[in-house]
Image (tube, rainbow, N blue to C red; front, side, top):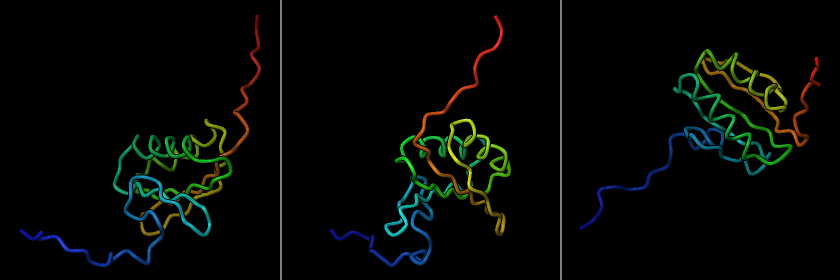
Length: 115
């Protein structure tokens, strides 16, 4: 019996690598990781971004696209909390795109004060 499924060209073939994916996809030219989290609600964008950063190699740039308005607070806070670099964000047609860079140095903690 023949399968009713057939392969067709993706309508998104001209989009960035990782478009429409929930797991990071690497751009073979730039080495950037793309993570499409559009449609997910808080806290999922921050949790998925945290996981992607944890699995990324040092120096890797992560480009995260989401639509959750809380991500404007959560993603920059996550970068600071984990010791990674927040490089900026853009908002286009309701899609918020963040650029983060995975750092190699371990996070330093503030010295404890008091007795």
